[in-house]
Image (cartoon, rainbow, N blue to C red; front, side, top):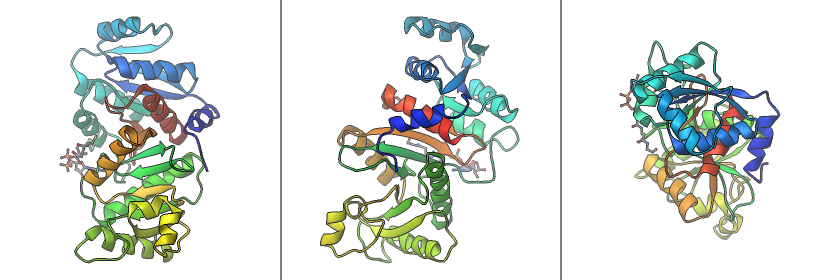
Length: 299
Ligand code: COD
């Protein structure tokens, strides 16, 4: 069990520093997080972007680029994304981080059938949170990539997130499949999927985790609420992972935790041959650093 997301930095430091290719590094927030990760000795950065702009931003934040490889590309973010992906493909980098490039351009480079980082699996997003109202770090998946996953996609989303849990030392994570209610209602697909996923887990199809649901979110994270409703489950009130029904539910939970719930988060995209650090502008610098550490733990 992890209680504090800072544990990710400690765990990442136990491994040799990972080389991280930063696609379009000419971004102040990204460079600040990279600088922190370098100071923490979590990564060795490989910066790709418009050299003059990267140097200018680095200078403005007091980031000394001496000894750091910087590949000059003046053809825009999409090309920088391709160059970063190529570095991982050639084994010259272990992680990719999104800089001043659109998510779509980065994902296109990652998903390219010939030059990308496909590994035969679905790509999905997982975010880990530390909330003042919960007793341990927990993950939410998929809040940012798969829009309306079907049952097959949800199986892969769980598997990716379970791999991430193992990567940060959470063995046999408890997975709560959330919906609006605890009972299966054929008109609410999330509840039907939850019951199927639970059964697959009981039948040994979905392994290395304990899956239960459908649960409303209060049941997933609060034992008293579960007791009150007479729900007996080792997952209820003690989940390590929350599988949300779709991107809307996930995104709202993600942002509500950060903006209303006082949570700190770390997030990555999984399922490619290397973890992808894909933070958004609304993430603070601490979250960006923690996301880099998370990727380093997993990659
Ligand atoms: N995993 C693996 N392969 C994928 C995935 C995935 N999750 N998604 C698409 N592919 C492959 C497809 O099999 C296909 O071969 C190719 O990529 C293109 O597929 P499309 O046409 O469905 O892909 P796009 O480019 O239209 O969409 C992919 C996105 C990830 C961009 C799309 O799913 C998306 O927009 N997701 C939401 C991103 C978002 O807006 N997030 C907001 C919160 S940050």
